[in-house]
Image (cartoon, rainbow over all chains, first blue to last red; front, top):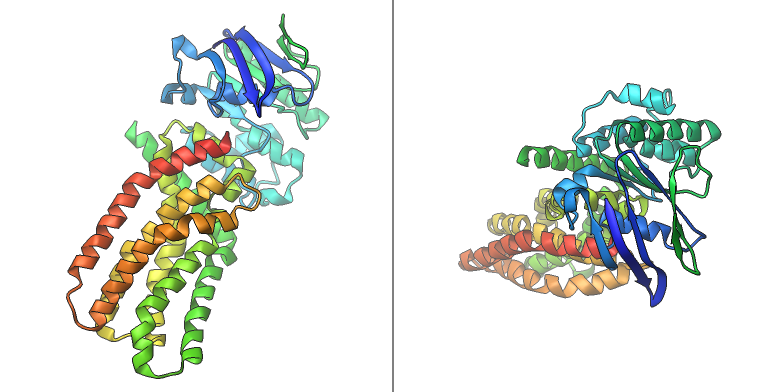
Length: 203
Length: 226
């Protein structure tokens, strides 16, 4: 995935300008910056949710539009968990897998993510961290190459963070790419894009 | 590929129906509202059978229209708030197809029950039995239009804080032609006049909206998640 000269102007305010980067196999890009620097906006652009920008994005193999193939190969997890509060963890996993076109063992997934024993409770009665875990379960079975994660550590406890970092590491070692925002220092080696009010640096 | 779409759409349908059945009051409230409105008319107007039969087509249709507006705001609101709407946009399957599934769920939960209880409503208003089949056909043809056109409005207003009033203003004028032809058809049936013309017009409304609105809804959803 390659981006060139991305500029975002929202409500006549320049969020960031001329951001360029390339994401290769097995690489993790960590988008950093103060609140309101446009980190989420950048991720939403890359996911194809937000199209009001200048610059060019090239997805795998030079595709310049979020075609069906691109959407199949990217996984975006935003601020909002994207789970149904009325349904239980098990039901949420079931429909999510059907939408992703994947058949995995839900019980095994529940065990991996540490929600075993809570599978029948409607998600609205679970804590924010537990709901976040349900949403993150997609990472354990998704065939997508590129993960776009917006603050995935939010509301997770220490053990959850460790679990997720482990999973990120695994994904990278199988050649996948990750672009994520986080206010937390990562234990996984990562390149950094810094979005800031003053200007944009990339190392 | 198409097989893949089909299982995704089936998953969407199943999920939304399940969620709706967990909050049963949302399904029952519009029907209850409809029932109350219709049962109040004979009380307020007086039980003269001629008058009731005369106004029955209009009353049933106006009440159906207002009842369908009740839950409309919620069509995309919950999905927008819990983030499943943006995941819908990101699905590999084309967005118009996905929103068509949402429209179908909405119709199954609001339009279809209405058609089912319509005979009871007709009885309450003393609609001649001979006009009942035509009433049912107009409802069968017309309620999908309510769901589909309503979905355009719901998708456009989903990101607004209090979109309910705007939504009603937006879609009510679009329902007027439907209302005119549907009630005209039932009235003609009451008087024993031919109804085929109006029914065919209703059918073309139905086909037109069901084929075109998914694209409008998809565009509106994209703007709303931006």
